[in-house]
Amino acid sequence: MRSSDLRHERELRRREGYRDVVLHAAERVILRKGFSALTMDDVAREAQLSKATIYKYVQGKGVLLFEIMGHYLDDLCGRVAAIADGPGPAGDKLGRVVRVILQNNEEMKSINRVLWMDKAMLKLMRVFAPPPGKAGAVPPADRKMMAMLRLKRQALVDLGARILAEGVASGEFRRLETAGAADFIESVLQGYMHVRFWRGESSLPAAAAEDLTRFIFEGIRNPGHPGKEI
Picture 1: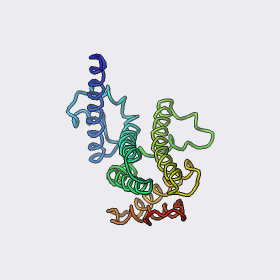
Picture 2: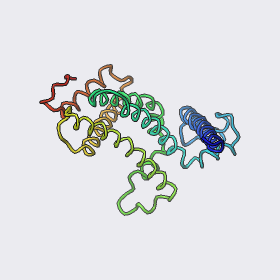
Picture 3: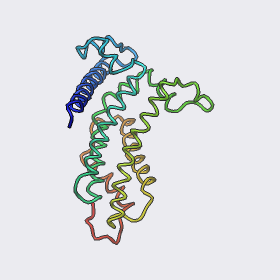
Picture 4: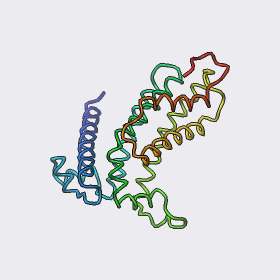
């Protein structure tokens, strides 16, 4: 590798490291004060960086929630990709992905609870689902960030579809339309986590991942395949 390429790689790692520091600092401030009360000065103090440095990595408070959500999706996608690329039958990979997704949701639980009680979330919901005929009212910067989140989410679903396709090819799963099945599995997991959120359940049941995996697997398992039962 050329020295210029090495310098470029080091600079990318350095910038990513600073961005992580900024986003984690913002999360801590949100947990203490809520998002509406947060200022970029708060983030700079928490991160122990200058405000000018903060703005190099986050354009401003208006995109901060998008950046935090994108950061979590990047981390989750990396963990799922490692499972998809790793060894083992598709059924085992699927079970590990379910556990990772539930674990990720547990890691976000505290900040999610704070955000859902914050009036700023109403504005964010209008970006996710604008009223009919009013999509054009969403600022271009917000539309750009929303498109970025959709791409990250789709990359995650595509990894799930890849695992399903692997299971179909090996005969472990019955023949199915893998993209649609991956969307369905995501919906099952999101629905489960949504119900737990509204019930106010404080801790994830120990058997949650196994129970959900069994529920999903029974719909896609090939009954003629001699593989193990989950």
